[in-house]
Length: 136
Length: 121
Picture 1 (cartoon, helix red, strand yellow):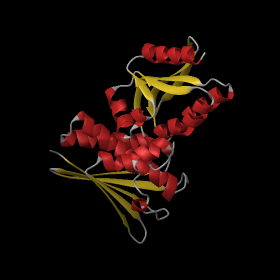
Picture 2 (tube, helix red, strand yellow):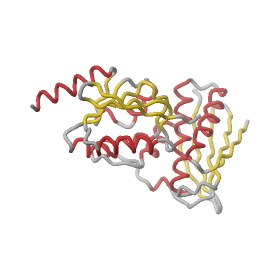
Picture 3 (spheres, chains in turn yellow, green):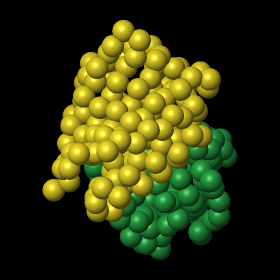
């Protein structure tokens, strides 16, 4: 089963993405903690797009597709902005990171902690973030 | 719908910020302004009560990171209290308890501030 949502590239619309994904994850059978974690991971991915791919341009669009095939819950988040490969942002060693009071890159770290898989692909006209969580 | 509110009050000599609602990339600038305001007024002993904070993303967490150095340099601290397990879990995932003192109850956080003030007198 698939579900689709498009949101404008505006931070005030992040709540729509969270609610859309949380509803689907709940319906899929995830417990409340997992539902919250999935919604947060999607928020982080969309925030990265607004910030890095669209650089806060408010008139662009983010596409969210959820593909549900038990036990796999997969979310594809697409944008048509600047290419950036988040895998090139090193996942920080948090102890080292925190001791230097750094900021930024936290979203990347969180996504990897919250989901089972985080993948990126760059296609000719779009970037895709693929987040996967398995229902155990 | 994406509501986030900050209210300020004093608990003894401690400046308490109460957070309510959803703290994400949209609302994080409000928290940033709140910290800037306190720092400008040289109010460095800050307790953030998270009792009604329903949600936090890395944008919100980043704000705490951005100001802690200045606040400690001013002789103060940011302490936090009354987090729901959901919100605490996110702070914990990022290792915040290594860097910030997080209390179950506001009263305990205030006592800790007071004890430090006594010790440095």
